[in-house]
Image (tube, rainbow over all chains, first blue to last red):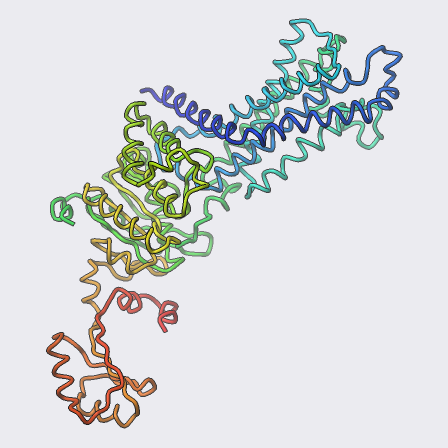
Length: 276
Length: 319
């Protein structure tokens, strides 16, 4: 077998393992990946949606707040997948599995490839499920078939980017709890400081510039334009550029942190040392 | 143990001048080792002696700062991939996947070892039977006892038929019965000709399992040899006599000047080189006049060796 075949085989094995893990944790994942975004959707649409929609001038635009909200909720759904990914990676680092495969002739990148692959898969499934619920709740997208393909592409690219970033976070955090906590800014803070719920230019001056120019806003704006049939302009390219940049940064960070002698992970590697 | 004589010429592990430090803290301070194929070699030492560090270096997990080491003929530097193909490691901390069933854990190892599907199923079934895990095969390790987890861990290590196995404290934290089972399993592996390097803090364990023992203290090997050789190195065999008062002790000491007296404990230790004959001799010399409170026969065990060869910190423990 060539090195490439073995690399593919090892990655497939790690994918298989992560899929098994996801199936074992299915109930937990449904709650965190699907139920939480659905509750956010309900809260913002039914409870706050009247006032928010009024403020946005729904009546004048002839579109209900839910159409504005759903693209943002989809991005939040993707971001909600960061926690489980970082936790799973961190568990492998602290629980001895990484040590085990390091003493075997296993392709070096396979483990992270498996984590990232299944992470993207989980994010896509959750986003599809939340889209389904949104449609039931009265979300009426005006996207063409081509627009839908673009939506799926951007969601997949954003998932890929955040999956690598989460994997890196899981590698450098020293505990499972730390891994979970460190992804909270991604899954909670950044969506609020973006155009997820209200436009960035409606925010106080202090955060306005940040909110307008951060990647979540770029991704949300592009999805919103595609789904509501508004002119997309360059927003889709900007979103994809952000995704590429985050993916690359997350990938390089992960590779650096996964090296056994990396100062970032030294505390974990030397866990048993100076030991018995 | 037969394997040693059969294959005494072949070397499984050869280490010279191994050094490792973490910052200021020196963990290994020039370790030399030669382990023959088919041998059970025990690294014995207290916590912090450097046992696990040796295992981590030899199993390619961490690099040494200095020194040369070959494992099954492959150089650790430059041939780590080849080393990994012939070794198996069962660490101190169980590395089973808690979300996979016992069987899936074995299949996972089989996949990572690139075994064919039929081969890995057959090997998994075989190991489940051998380690008495058939009934638990479809459950996740969350429901396992500590001993079962260790057995699964070891079974995972064996999936790829390794020729050299590192067992890092294989029975630490196990109850006596699980420890017996583990020892049994290790002995069976030895019969198959597998080379085993085991670390342990238990002298009893090294004595039971190992062909050769290296006693490690503060990153150095302070004694090495077969359990018998190590025991012979210290003059431990004696008859211990305890008396009711110092007058009796003084009288006995006068009768047996070769003994060493301990006035605080009212004890006299008389060397016992000839077993029962020495005992009869001692009793005859004491006669009926000296009242002996207590008599015990002390044969040297590895504890004596251990405390004799390790540093002051260990001596405190012995008291």
